[in-house]
Amino acid sequence: GDSVTQMEGPVTLSEEAFLTINCTYTATGYPSLFWYVQYPGEGLQLLLKATKADDKGSNKGFEATYRKETTSFHLEKGSDQVSDSAVYFCALRRETSGSRLTFGEGTQLTVNP
Amino acid sequence: GAGVSQSPSNKVTEKGKDVELRCDPISGHTALYWYRQRLGQGLEFLIYFQGNSAPDKSGLPSDRFSAERTGESVSTLTIQRTQQEDSAVYLCASSTAPGQATYEQYFGPGTRLTVT
Image 1 (cartoon, chains in turn purple, yellow):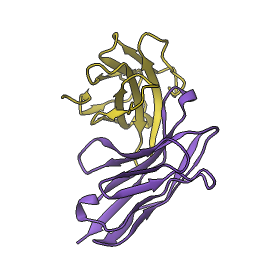
Image 2: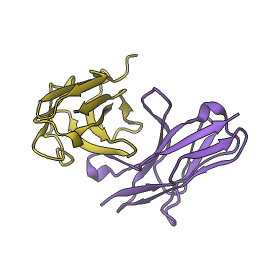
Image 3: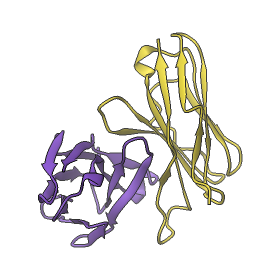
Image 4: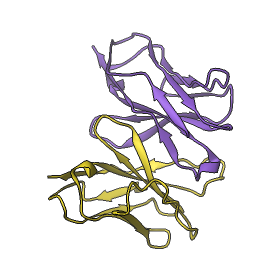
């Protein structure tokens, strides 16, 4: 079945450090890929997405590129801020699976000043 | 406009009791999803409603779990004879019809269920 594997957390970085949170997936066909973010005390929000191979999703300084050859969708940001502290979830969706999202386990990120 | 709302925000119940969790989707969203998030884990799909089609119940973990949806509005997730392993945050999401160019799932704040 479909699955998503994320880099284990927690991850702690200093402000302005380069961030990478790894995500790989297993799925048949061509799923759409997503990163969701859950800020402290808030609901889950879509951060970015990519719907086909080699697409790059970007938002709020975050980027992720859909790499079919490595089945990966790693999240990157060049310079972090304390306000980026949150839990990040990688997810996939196959249109043939009724549009449900399959999530990774989440990565807790803490950015220190 | 208003987002997805869920009630109650927290629920503590005794083992063996039944509970009902409510979800109000975004107005006009035809699709509605329930997920469960256990402590330290990712979200697990439970059930999916789309318009008047039969729901996809393939994620429900046991026959103690059921869900209903009234038309394209409110949904209720019911857990009968609750067990301690049911303790989790239950998240609801809604979206426009799948297949539309920009459809995305918007999540509610969740209901934290604790079974004692």
